[in-house]
Image (cartoon, rainbow, N blue to C red):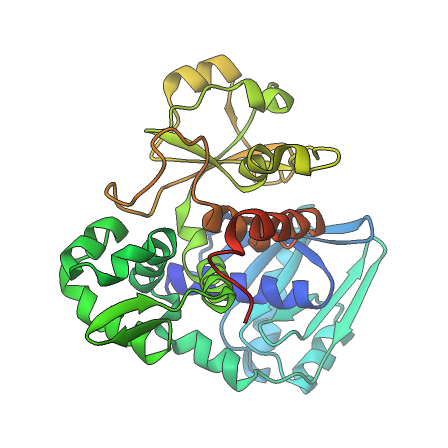
Length: 356
């Protein structure tokens, strides 16, 4: 199972947990390879002020034969005093769910089945099957980075739809030879319309939401390049970012764009900065230090831009595009961020991407 496949599966399981009413934070950059070739990721699961930290083992398939050996492997971190071990799978059948619960082994899968207990939390869901739509999403081109990058470019600049493939490829930062297949796929799924041989973006909220969901599952994990702590976290508004190299995303970007619309500007739990790398000046001035894998709050995330330099952006803007802010907020699964995402949509996106 490749690293990209693992990240995608982790994101799908995290989304399934969120649909069960839980808040889930995933720290994919803290992965550490095991002798078995599997990789662990860190998760924090919470609800109503109760939370649990996990180190999770990603395994696509679980069978009765592999269960005994896997249970022994999963218990090693707990024996060493580390975070609770959590098994993440594509799908856990009802009989295997019962066995895992009997063994007090937490698990979660992409269908929404889960067993979590401790810290004031108790969740047990069994018997759910993967919906045909989930199976289709898993194999669809919606998770390819190329398709997501092209869609993002079209969302940011609708006029690109009628441009030559070379111009779209440059704006999306994708290979030109991939464009015919991507364009055909977007037309087939109704996201691009062709009228009198002219292409148009089907710019409704469906497009925006489908892209945001697919971005969270298929591309967002690849953008994270670093996590930091700083004693100057609460003074982030005073930091000087150069729009040509770094821009605010996520909660900070929403706070800047919404301004007085927020009755009481909330303290961000994570500050997101998009840039190829942090300027040395900023690192020195704000006294950045690498964050430990267990850190979840008061973090500075650095994410790599995934778009081309020719994509139309306000040269003086402090933030990334509103559509990306919207998607990043939704991807956190946090109630505060989801509320801010809806405000971003209403204020900056609804006119261009109206509800159906």
